[in-house]
Length: 112
Length: 114
Image (cartoon, rainbow over all chains, first blue to last red; front, side, top):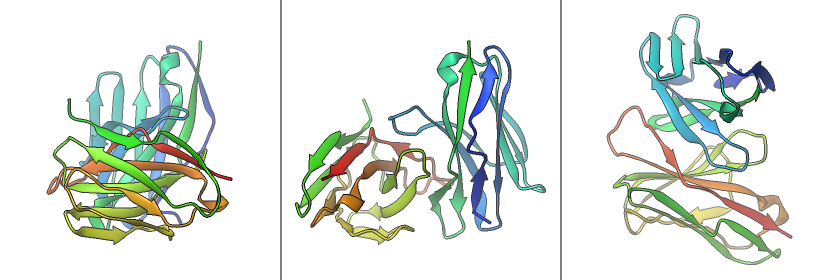
């Protein structure tokens, strides 16, 4: 099993709907998780971090962490075409809290 | 404004040439990283540094080398470029002691070796 796994998509969601992105992780990562957004041809941009079980909300974004089931998700409410991008899930490595392990990303398309 | 910079943004070079990709940050961060990313693929850590005179190899085997003589500067060098080095190279930084590590990325260098 990979350390961090994501469905590569593409995930297609109508404008205004809720987009749900999921990520599972193995025991080889630590307990801090990050969501990055990467537009085509651009570099990753940090949008959310979550360290504790439960939900964390920031504007239209909600990150959810379930340590018992080893998954982390990102919900985007009121999806906009500008949300179309690849979303990368990352976790701190057990080899060192300052190293991140990335999933391969989920490509999200918001249809007007 | 605090930021992280990479130059050049695009580079096309012939096989066998020596190249240096530059990365500088004004974020005041101690830790810096180099990642390699092929289109549509995940990021792979190739080098990292926890501070001046500290460099470590990452998880992906790489023929590149790095140096960290100044806190703000973390260049990556390929002694002899090959077509297999064609990729996007991303530099990132994070604050020392901040755990967990929130990393911030530069704009990237897209390298093509012909």
